[in-house]
Length: 378
Ligand SMILES: NC(=O)C1=CN([C@@H]2O[C@H](COP(=O)(O)OP(=O)(O)OC[C@H]3O[C@@H](n4cnc5c(N)ncnc54)[C@H](OP(=O)(O)O)[C@@H]3O)[C@@H](O)[C@H]2O)C=CC1
Ligand SMILES: N[C@@H](CC=O)C(=O)O
Image 1 (cartoon, rainbow, N blue to C red):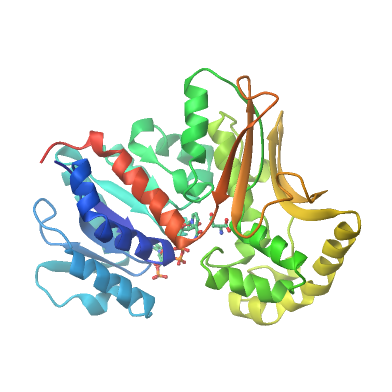
Image 2 (tube, rainbow, N blue to C red):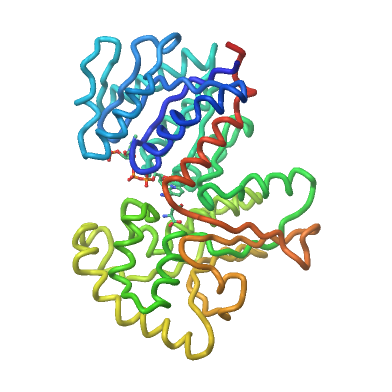
């Protein structure tokens, strides 16, 4: 049996769903010969960790208690009554994670799983990679930081998995890696890579106002913590950058042309998420509905499209025929067309649910199971 010691950063929608999947897949994983031993979980404020990371674990009852507490808005600290657990905050928790990685990296190994939506994890991830541990990411920010950070994070290709950073649970990264490993050359990627914007566009076609559908997308778990990350195109741009870098492009976010659905006056420096959802987004309803109606008169629909080709990497709204592959998309589905030597006239097409806590966490879990060979037999 392979045992994977695991530490989770981020207990939001995706992180909690991951813990639930881990618990519910115990017997399946036993059949696969793998055991996920969760040694710690942390959120933005604190880290809960077992007192002996070599032998102990947070048991399944406790993991489900973490999910309940975080869902109800309680802090992780409220859960710690046992002397067998340690609770650390802020810089102490960073030091502790690195300390755990230093100890486990040399012996049993460690999978550090980033289900946060923060850039603050980049420093820890880089240290942990240096210490010989594995990292599994749903968080796109580490891979879309500087080239220097990127190079460090991917420096041990077998020690990093990040399938859920693009297309949630869809096997996008795996497909591209397989194509590249065979010596085939990808020359064009076109796709609709935002579950939120896909859902928004198809709901607008049904006549619903933007302000209503953005709130619905948030409650369905499709959006980033701040939905402006989706509506600004920034979340899609991050996915485009991850794909472009996978293809070997040495570019940064500022090389990508990005179309935003809202003006700068509604940006994060000007209004809070609540102000945007309660007031700001209402002011966008009319304009976007007019664009949707105008497209409809031409038999077209609006889609937020990512194009990576030649030296062009851009994301923005396109008016497309209703019956085109992208035009036919509904709800939070993503579609990605990959053109290469082998997939030249007919692209390789990957399509399916592109957002949501369940599918994203499932992608993260599959990534964790995929690195089992790097861990010793128990
Ligand atoms: N939802 C989806 O469909 C998809 C999401 N993703 C990615 O998954 C990630 C998580 O998304 P989601 O669960 O919706 O986000 P949430 O906002 O629901 O959760 C984020 C979690 O991260 C925690 N956190 C914030 N900063 C830190 C930090 N420095 N260290 C440790 N934990 C931290 C938060 O803590 P606290 O609870 O204290 O606020 C919270 O628990 C995002 O990066 C997102 O882009 C990827 C693909 C699809
Ligand atoms: N907010 C993202 C979630 C997945 O990355 C999206 O809407 O696609």
